[in-house]
Length: 197
Image 1 (cartoon, rainbow, N blue to C red):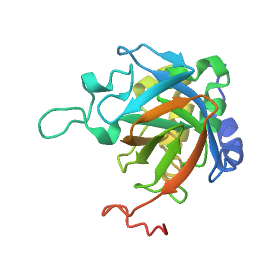
Image 2: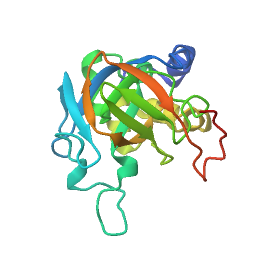
Image 3: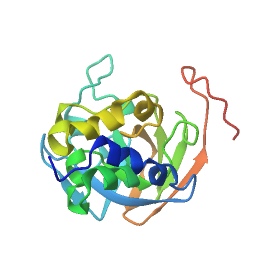
């Protein structure tokens, strides 16, 4: 794991992550997981409420389900800050193992995109949900223990360094390089965040 940064090195890169655009961000990468453990990078894709990121295994079942056992739409799309994964992975070719569907150059902290915020990407609209996205044993195996500590500490969780979950509220087409723009936001009962439309 020596190829990865120590916790001190990761913490030194935090200001660059927090300097990501508040709005008018960019879609830097798209990844699907056709089967558990598989990662495929795409230049473009369709997203929909029915299938999530088309080609991803989310519709076949995931860790969070609805009352009838269906994959829960609140964890349909995994999104991570592109600057954060660049710092953690160190090598652009090593982004995909994180398992997130979209890597965007945009501030994903709760103050900028609280749950209920809708992001327009390409012709699609994705709404940020309030389900926490945390590092796990797989994240440790891919990027080292210090990386998992970095995203899972109190500060890391507060800043949502591991990323966020989103659900598709407007089916559409995405492509790497597309602008990412906040289009609306609403207050979810559990968030307690007041957002001006």
